[in-house]
Amino acid sequence: NDNDKIILISDRHGSGKTEVLRNIHEFKMRNYRKNYWISFVSLEEHEEVLKNFDASFREKTLHKLLNINSPFEELAFCKFYNDKKVILLLDGVDNLSLEAKQNFTSLIEDPKLYQVWLTCQLENEHLFEVLNVTHNYTIKQLSLREKMEYIQTKKLDNFSEKHLEQSERLEQS
Image 1 (cartoon, rainbow, N blue to C red):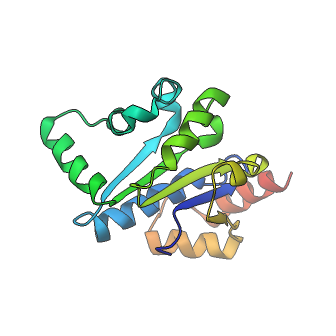
Image 2: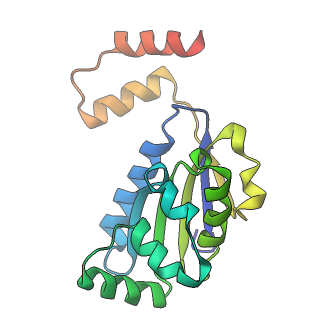
Image 3: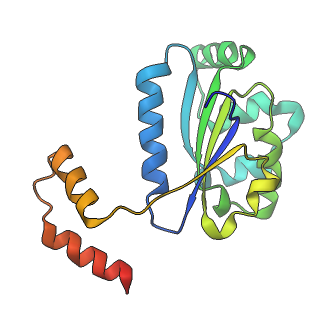
C-alpha cells in the first residue's frame, strides 16, 4: 500500500523474514527501479554508522548506510532523495544496540524517505510503537503441501518430500 511509510515483517527466529525482504527487494527492483532508489541493507553490518548518526548530517549517514561511494551515485541518490523517492529494505532492526536503535528511529522518520521496510523477531514487537509502524506482516508458516507446491514451481529437484517431512518434524519438536 502506498500510504504505508514504515512496514514491519515480524516472526520468530529463522522463519524466513530476510528471504521475504530479499524477495520484496527483487520485486521492487524489477518494477520500480526507474522511478525509485531501492536498497536492501543488513543493519548488523552498519552498527557503528547508526551509533554515530547525527541528524544534521542525515543524508551523509544514508550514503554510508547504503554504501554510496562515487560522485555519480551521490548525485543520483540526491535526486531520488530530494524527490522523496527512496525505498529502504532494512534487515534485522532488533539486532541493533539500544544506542543504534535510538538513532535508527530518528533516521527512518525522515520525511524524504518514501517507504521503509523492516524485519524484526516477534518477541521484539514492542518496536511497533517506537518506530511508528504503519503496517505489520507476520509470516505464515507453510504446510507440507504448500512447501511441495513451492518446490515444484521453483523446480528444486534436489529436495524431496522426505526432506520436508523431516524438517517439519524438527520444527514441531
